[in-house]
Image 1 (cartoon, rainbow, N blue to C red):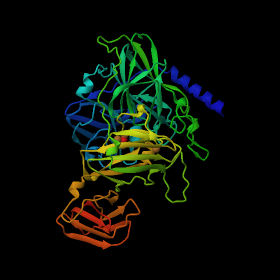
Image 2 (cartoon, rainbow, N blue to C red; image 1 turned 180 degrees about the vertical axis):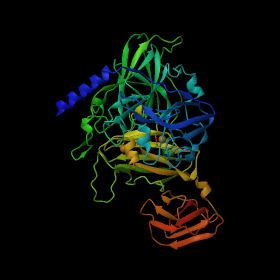
Image 3 (cartoon, rainbow, N blue to C red; image 1 turned 135 degrees about the vertical axis):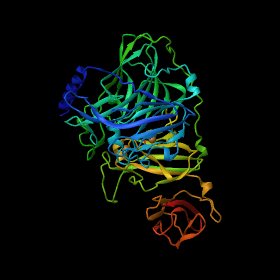
Image 4 (cartoon, helix red, strand yellow; image 1 turned 120 degrees about the vertical axis):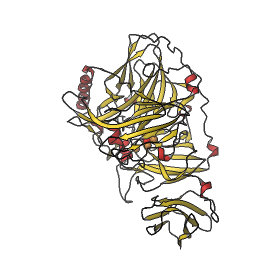
Amino acid sequence: MKEIIFSAATILLCVANTHAQNALSIPATVTGAAINLNVQSGTRNFYPGFTTPTYGVNGVWMGPTIVVNKGDSITINVTNNLPVKTTMHWHGLHVAAHNDGGPHQSINPGATWSPTFKVLNRAGTYWYHPHGAGQTDPQVSKGIAGFFIVHDAEELAFNIPHTYGVDDIPVAIQTKAFDELKQIAIATNMDTALFVNGTLDAYHNTPAQVVRLRLLNGSSLRSYYLGLSDGQNMHQIATDGGLLDTTRTVNKLLLSPGERAEVLVDMTGRAGDTVYLRSYASLLPKGVYGADTLGVGVDSVVDYGANFRNGADFNVLQLRIVAPTTSPVTTIVTTLTSMGAINPAAATNTRAMVLDTFRMLPMDVPNRAAGPFAINNKSFDMDSINEVVYLNTTEVWTLKNNTLVAHPFHIHDVQFNVIEEHGIPVRPEMRGWKDVVLVMPMDSMKFVTHFADFADDMTPYMYHCHLLHHEDDGMMGSFLVVDSTKLTAPNFAIPTQTSLIVYPNPSNGWVTLQYADAIKQPELVTITDITGRQWFKARGNHQKWQISTSAWPRGMYIATVSNAQEVATVRFVVE
Ligand code: C2O
Ligand code: CU
Ligand code: CU
């Protein structure tokens, strides 16, 4: 059996190698105070004789690179010319929840969504992609994704490559699956077609000097263990959230879906050579999608072993080294920014995120490699709020993976610092600002983050697994960032704990008030409007209250739940 798979893989690789190589597409840039993104559909001919329906932004396949400076105030007009709803999320950007482009900012066919915000992020490589409830994988796989590059004065002053497409090269890596008719397929493990910036079998004419690769893993499932085929080291200068404090020399780099890394590679004097950016997937740890093994026994993924890329090394991008430019960068910078870090001692709250299979009933025995998966055993629900965070607080989140597959955990709104992995303080090479972290099978991870700037009682942010199939399947939760000082009103104490949640918000005729923690038992529940008029009052020991709001006027309401130990308030809206 092993033999057969091996020879099938060899044949496929030979076929791939006889293909005409294609010049790497360098996405056009869009910049300025008003950026227009037209989301559209079309077709491409990736395979002779087959027409493949695709999606794209300002074109029919992939999207342009947004380039902005920190401090810019921008409006992005996202026009949906697709026949279906979409959304557009600015992955890694620190923006208000209503500008974030999550599942709650759905854009109808024919409509334009125009978030306006100030760019607050550090210089770095961010990206954008659709994020509709249950629709992320289909729309990303069909071609909607682009880079979102932020520059700042500090980064522009360093002697590092800055010429986009020449020595500062965007490299978005994606594998996709095609069915027999060469239609892009999702919810399959046969993602054998490898694209860089939407180009199959890509080569890039790379000048013989120091070049900067902005690596993005935009794949739905697959992780890469990236290195150079000539064995030379790469010099990492940035993680998800921008520049590091000092350059980190790495031979290989594990990049999971959603993650970015910027590396410098030195091609000085190499004109005429060919070097490959390669994934050394045979070295990926078991349980990482792309490694040779995922799961064991009944806890396995159907067809995983049939995909020739799993556990095999393969080329990602051919670098054809050509003559240097007229003013090349020839040295590798060593000292970078004052990166900063959050002091975990400042944390006033901790939260646990358990990444596990989803059990509808306690006796369910789900597959620990194939799922379905959920976070804290809650499957994503558009109308629920899973967590409430207070504005201007620092929190430590523990990510605990109880499954046999590695999950890249991503949080919106903030960047974080990883402080612990499998219970021990983090390795130095894990420092830096991150918004995605890969949590290994049966392992744990801890990060510290700070929630600043944007409070909104109604619109949540997301946290989720960035394996898009898992995300769409419900491995996602929502959190509100609320300003506790705005929750005070005469006779109401400032809430002392954060586990009281209200949903749906706005109410849809009913609201549910619920404690996340079963030990907290409310005794008195009252609901008033903002004028102080009382609309509901009851006593009882319920962990969950369901209250009809259908007869109440539109407006903001304040629910107060109290027992002998504490008083908690939450606000919600009746529409
Ligand atoms: Cu890259 Cu919530 O997404
Ligand atoms: Cu995101
Ligand atoms: Cu996952």
